[in-house]
Length: 162
Figure 1: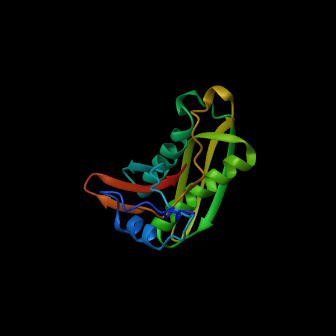
Figure 2 (figure 1 turned 180 degrees about the horizontal axis):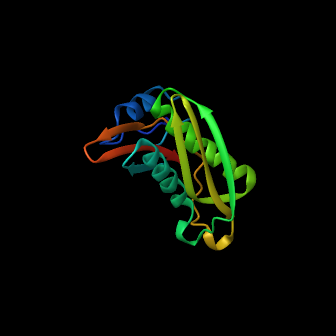
Figure 3 (figure 1 turned 120 degrees about the vertical axis):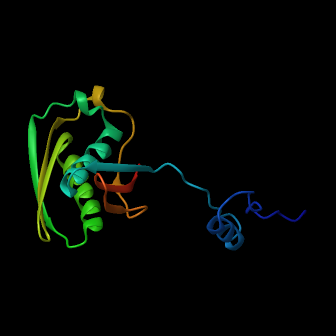
């Protein structure tokens, strides 16, 4: 019987160092691949809160045409977080959780901050087939997470898992 070749292909030209390292240690039969399916969302606003609202709209805009969503039902949420970057991820993930739990797609967002206490909400309607874009956002991640004040306002960004 002829020897079996390794299931791990050689490093691909141009792949990152992590992928090369993983390929070099992968046992026979296992492999890794690059995954570029996630999407970066950016929210901008005159205030920190407006940038969070805009980031929420960008997140839900991945899944639905927000101009077609009717603000029929509202939800509220509150949480405590001192770190504004972590607050962005918590905000987006709480909204996504409420959306999945209640079967709603949101089109309008509001949030306010008092020290470490954040209170916000969203309004929208139950999902309809004609609203869906065929992409589901599963959650906001810490990848490329950044919240910063710029000359002309605030920017809040992160990568969302789709």
